Image (cartoon, rainbow, N blue to C red; front, side, top):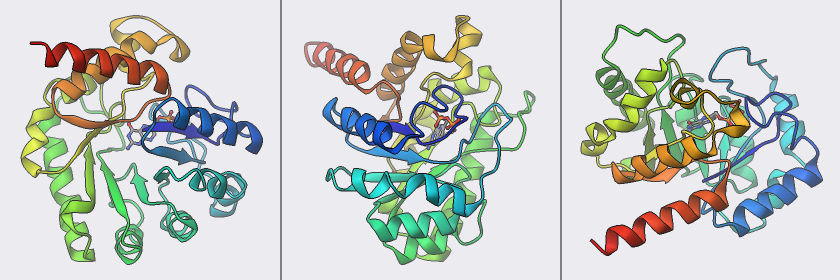
Length: 255
Ligand code: HH2
């Protein structure tokens, strides 16, 4: 999954793709480099705080010149939004997936919108603040369970749900690392697992670096995530990730 942030303030690439022409060209590159899904967001989630909440109209204005063009490439598009109204609008235009960083537990209309459009949903774990004292695996498991109950009540089939532990969201760096290390804890749900470790701050905790200088750490995290059961990785650097995964797969096949 390639990331396209049409935002002024995303933590690693804010402001780079606000211009619609630049955003569309970037999405075309992500697709050409091998992304199977393009994830488009117009409101920074700012996992590390400081996000400015964007009103519905502003989110739509940012997306309007970009989203239909990218959907036109024929690649499945996911809409990274916390607002059911934005999700409904994007699904109406032809987006296939809703990527909700509050796992259907934020906007009370989100599950209904996903269900009514027959869309897929990415259920990501989140919490308002990190608590180093909690057992993060148990916390994520019970969050997923709550989201799956909401999804079931709304009539979203389990076959349309992807689970994501939400690397960097309401977690200490150690907890983010634990989520990748112990990803198999969630295989039992029987749903695809997504990991989005790209350029995130836990990498800095291991190897001091600015967000744009975390490619090595991102590749390492995603390789291990796939080894541990991830079937989707959400990345900014598609070409490098595709190459790393292809080489790892070739080595695994030769074992
Ligand atoms: N991470 C970010 C945003 N959306 N969605 C899912 N499912 N999983 C993630 O790990 C995830 C996500 C944060 O990254 P980015 O989009 O680059 O930053 P920002 O939210 O600041 O735009």
